[in-house]
Image (cartoon, rainbow, N blue to C red; front, side, top):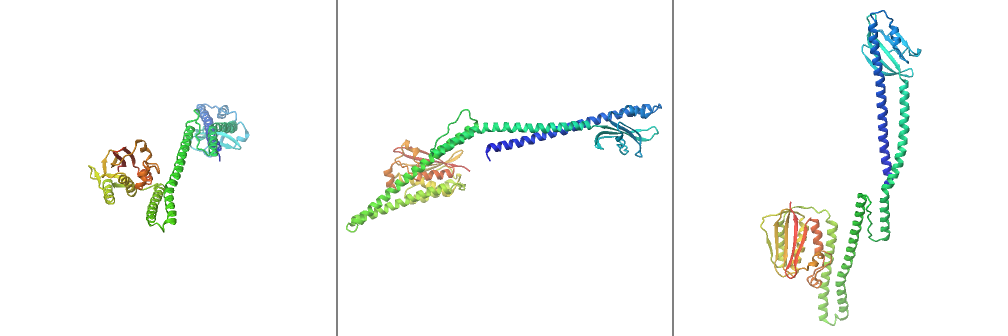
Length: 450
């Protein structure tokens, strides 16, 4: 179902319900107020009759004459004794003779329907001239009121239908006005899809706030997709280039060994060593790419837990210092620092930075752990050649290497820092880099505190 149809349907149904409820409320309130007014007036008339009868009881005035003087234009007056017998009956119509109700020793009033007519009725206890307590019952025909109610009912029904037709038409017009810019936006999106380019949508100043936000979101999505696509293309090109080099070398040496390997022992040793080195490099590069893919796919919701960062870093550096055969110094004034990390991915992250410090410098590696107010700061210092300032923002790009020749000699793939960035993101760790050419580099990790 279209959005416009839904808006029309829902608003129309809601307004129908509201209008019907209001009309029912008006109808029944008007009916009750009108009937209560009639019954109250009739009750007042009955009280006046009682007073008149009491005043005439001392004189020998005919009570029937008194009742006749109070007779309504269309009604019935009777006096019912305790034996449920009408001792007096006065009516404007013969068919009203049987309207009298049974004797009750109480005063009451109500609306009754008898013989196809509607009556307002009151019953008042009076002392009749023989001293017996009887009921003075007065009935007034109020069919004219119900005719008014019927007219009101049809007026409300017709007005409801007219209101609904007007609302439906207005709703349709308003819906078209509201949806017009959205439909135009959809049309622009479809054109963008057909051109297969990451084109942005023009934002009109007259558009609503929501439409502007939708357009901005679409434009940001286009930019993100474009950036992602460019990164993917760059990754494929870089990966192809990186894989092509060792494969080309291996292919060249294998061709050379086929031709001269049996007659030139010196070439045989050189070829085998070179092929072996390039095979190792190819294996390492493949493993790095698999690690990167694994991190992006499987580390979406890694579990973070409370860990003593000092203990974790100390345990890792102890192992790596033996592997590197180089001293790794840890400087801190704290006994323990509780951070929220994932142990395995944090170890992998620290290993990448320490491995880089080992590869690109010949000096000792220094680690500083500091307790900040909102986070734990880990600084990894190396005393290598440093990084040029304009290259600092690019070092986390896949396959980017500051010194490609030196990186090849040290076995770098250009993926390590990209992997480190992904691991840091999963652990909610911020990374900052400070470097001075010819002095060294500092990688600063900001770990969440527990």
